[in-house]
Amino acid sequence: MKELKTLSEMQAEVDQYIGQFKEGYFSPLAMMARLTEELGELAREVNHYYGEKPKKPTEDEKTIEEELGDMLFVITCLANSLNISLEDAHNRVMHKFSTRDKNRWTRKDVEENGNN
Image 1 (cartoon, rainbow, N blue to C red):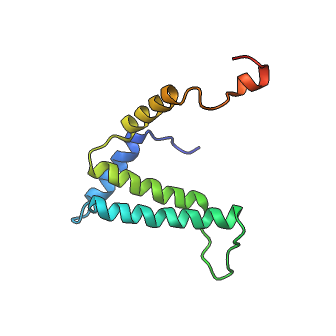
Image 2: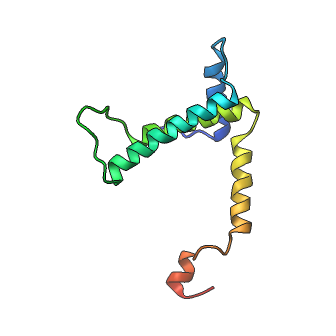
């Protein structure tokens, strides 16, 4: 079974990896460009699997999971370079969604039971 890691542990692991190189983290702007590149690669994979554009036989075999992993790595690098805790960021956004958007969507128990 795979070891589950917290976001803090993931951030520490990435920081340890990047810390072994003299170059360190790229600038935030360079990481945004890299994140944009990775998002394009993810979009391409999603389009291949779920869209109308099948892969060419000459294209490398990649997966959505791999592309999401690449994006997560770059996001983690960006957060680390800006001293942002991804756990804190996650908690803030979940609080926002559970308060601001709490009545925005139809809850399953409401739909299934006819209750509020």
